[in-house]
Image (cartoon, rainbow, N blue to C red; front, side):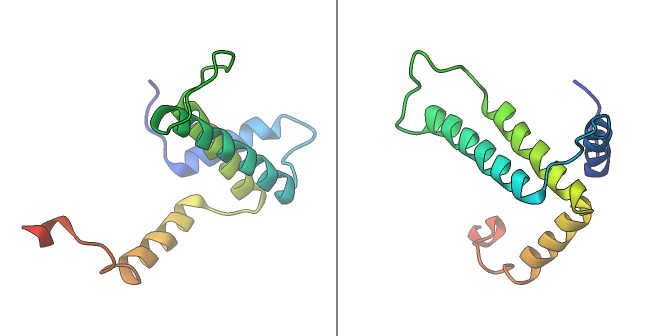
Amino acid sequence: MSEHKTMKQLQQDVDIYIGQFKEGYFSPLAMMARMTEELGELAREVNHYYGEKPKKATEETKSIEEEAGDVLFVLICLANSLNIDLEQAHEIVMKKFNTRDKNRWTKIEDEK
């Protein structure tokens, strides 16, 4: 297993990978279509493992981990192409959840 990477390092890894191809990043709209496709594949695997829909004998075995990785890769591609720092985006979202939604859910310590 490799060392733990920051989101910034993950974004750099993807940028280096994509940078070796003349085509570069797909358009944002094409990446949204790809993201939708990958989310569907992730949903399908989750449904096979935890839902009521068993896999067909002819279907390829894929892991939820692999499908989640595909979603992450496309998200990073989209962010990179739009110059979005995902670490900063995460901080913005966490601030929102810790302010707007701070009393929305029952905290574990409140149950004791």
